[in-house]
Image 1 (cartoon, rainbow, N blue to C red):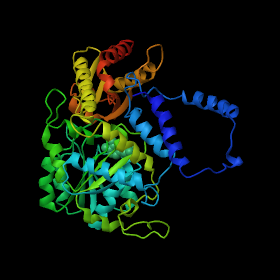
Image 2: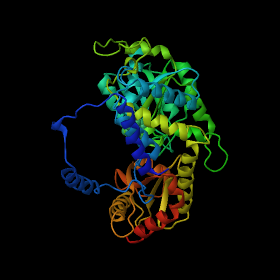
Image 3: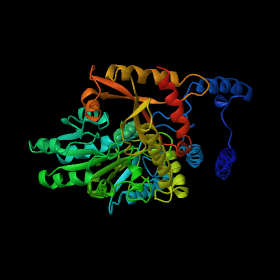
Image 4: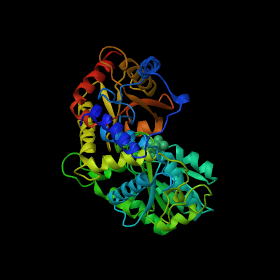
Length: 454
Ligand SMILES: *Cc1c(COP(=O)(O)O)cnc(C)c1O
């Protein structure tokens, strides 16, 4: 699809709709002449050049990429109207689109029943899940792994509940023995499991953890903000296929968070929270004197902690899902390419004398470090930082990211290294663009070249 053409159509569609309401005079206070606009726009686009090229496969750093063109057109078309998905009064069309996409997400995870909505971010979506958890277990805390997203600890503070970080195993997954020991104290009411940690992409053993739910009467919340859409590769044929058990077990968990603005091809401002039991809606009970008048139908603001939310986010996701649905044949193909890219690169790294794999990729995140002499953490830390910086310069830049690994985790995976520091930065690349698949040999040789310079 030609983005320029469809952006023009977005403006046309809005104009045609608006014209039906008849002419009116626009206010002079808002008028800006084109010459003046051109000048400021020039400065503006110049300033935007300061960004890293997230769109290009040579950017292999954080979880960042532009939205799909369909999402851009969907967003901008709806944004001209600027609906607010807080209430059906604020955005009737986009609120209904939101209900539909949330249903598609629930189906993707195998939920038979659900209550859910989009949020501004994964952080807010997780906050909502932990808020409901606290209402159900007001006197008990929340457990999450030491590699869970940092916002879980922060949000426990916000909610005034005790947070417990549980150690991880040699692959970065929650240690179930340590978790069970904690649950036996009776201090925990909810366990957060991560399906795809932000650092390494590790998948907590959700299937095995479910047995603990019955034994200790806890809720299980799955934070799949980053990893959720990988459920589309569970049991798939070919190298990109993932072990089914943890993904299928998500259907039996109490709540799920997934971020369409990470792997769902969406612009920022699009997280989602789903609850298996629609009855939890009662905890959100409130009345709003300003809104909720046009219908008896549920307003999304009635089941959400946030008030105003962009209807355009729902519009963008709806349009995208019409074209690339959250199915193995649709969006699954996009994720599979990134997963294959990560596998191919990790094989190249394993065959390299200049680079070493930190651990095999679980999803599409590759973790690796330069081989140094001496083979010690402080030297690895310095070399990783140097490669990150030098990589961004010159004619053929590459953009990576670093991840701090603590000494115990590092030497657990690589016992021959000398632990002469408390930890070390390693290199980390999220290969979330399907285009990365064609580009990994290029990336690899460039990073090898940087490592050779030491
Ligand atoms: C990104 C992420 C979050 C936070 O989501 P935001 O949308 O950045 O607020 C939470 N948990 C995990 C596992 C994540 O990867």
